[in-house]
Amino acid sequence: MALTLASATQLLKRNGLLRELIGEDRWTLDPHSFDNADTNFTDITYDTRKVSQGALLFCKGQFRAKFLDNIDDTGLAAYVSETPYADKTSSVGIIVNDVRKAMSLLAAEFFSRPQDSMTVVGITGTKGKTTTAYFVQSILNSFSGNKAALFSSVDNCLDGVHYQESDLTTPESLDMFRMMSAALDNGMRYLVMEVSSQAYKVDRVYDLHFDVGAFLNISPDHISPIEHPTFEDYLFCKRQITKNSSHLVLGRDCAHADLIREDAKASSTTVSSFALDESRMNDESAPSDDVCRAADCPVNDGIATVCAVPTSDTETESYSMYVSHESLTKIGDFTLSIEGAFNAANAAAAIAIALHLGIPQGSKALHALESVKIQGRMERFSARNVIAYVDYAHNYASVTALLDFVDHKYGSKHPRITLVTGSAGNKAYDRRKEIVDAAQNRIARFIFTEEDTDTEPHVDICKQMLGYVSNDSVEASIVMGRTEAITQAIEESEIHHETLNVILIIGKGEERWIKDHGKHKQYEGDDIAVERLLAKYNRNVQD
Image 1: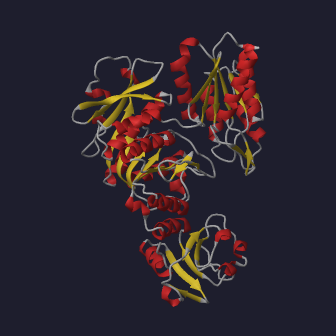
Image 2 (image 1 turned 135 degrees about the vertical axis):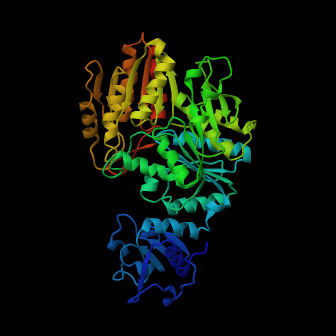
Image 3 (image 1 turned 45 degrees about the vertical axis):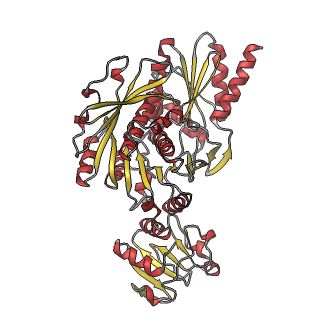
């Protein structure tokens, strides 16, 4: 871990980020104007409460000068900022054009660029990032003997075995490189990580290069004053993964795929693709070349398409996987433990990534994804006349995909569908109407309830969503307590005991908290609540 004032200055100069160094009444570009210019920083942080002797501090985000009160007592060596604070500290100020970009560059250097010693996979898209990341990690773990780390919106895994709940889809750059370094120390050879649009918007992955990037799909999401002002901005941020990857795995049917292929051509990024082809379901013959349509992706040499084709068994999540290049080859038959055709597409993406990383087509490691289950994602619970799914669906695309799945699997039974949902506060305001629009002509009942929020009252969000319901044949109400909302949905199933009741509880999954005005309040989790309440429902019915 070697980073000094001198080496930091040189790196920032090379990248056009340095403005000047300020300290001891001196403004200069020469780090050797200050004592200890070649002394290693002992630590780096963006939290003034964690500053220790010899540390480097990044003043980012909503930083305030008062945070530096008495900071010299901690032994701060230097700070990186877009604003000088010479009146608050005698430590050297490294003044830069963009503190977030500077933090990513310097954090990577401080931790000796751990990304250079691992094969790094980055996955983006509006939906499916987490599931695809888990699928890829399972394959790489099987192939390498648990030498694959994972950064996801659900969990982080730094040793290939143990998982801890994560805070962000993509960590802050400083935290990310610290975690990468720990993973490398644990002997990890691979790192699989989700890459959010915000990660590029706020430079969490600035200057990070992926051996393989994946662009799964794109649809409007995260559109709000504090996220992306427009869909164009959202897509533009997502597209940055293309030029920052040596190879891109692209969804064949991804919207704006032609533009993404232009990005790839401009940056000399090779491309392969993946697809789900449900049109071939029940076809006992081997698919012809047009199933995967590899010719639809003529970007660079070496094109291949991995295609998932459902089998005729609707009771299991069984798919045949094919790879098309100059000829069509069957990889094998796969039965997934996680339901939904959209997850078969995610599995095809994972296999396409693995094949590019050199996993042989005949390797048993590819089948490791069959056993993957993710808490809070398409978790199925059942009791008597009730089938409930807990899922993180939270926007138009994911709710539509979820209802498509229900229609495909249970449509012949004409189920009564109840959707228990809310929407996050203070961001992605468009989701509220989108969730209603995706569902209101396909379900019998809405129950709007609390979800995460910063300053917006839960009830105001629910009232807004209720106001978007325009289909008079759909029942809709607000039940503020999330557990109470799930309870009501299950209890109503008894009224409709002669019908199959499908209850969809979306948005929170297995999270054990609900964010209320910026604070986490304890919550048992949708999965635990559903399992407990269905067990009670069964006992009550039997009594």
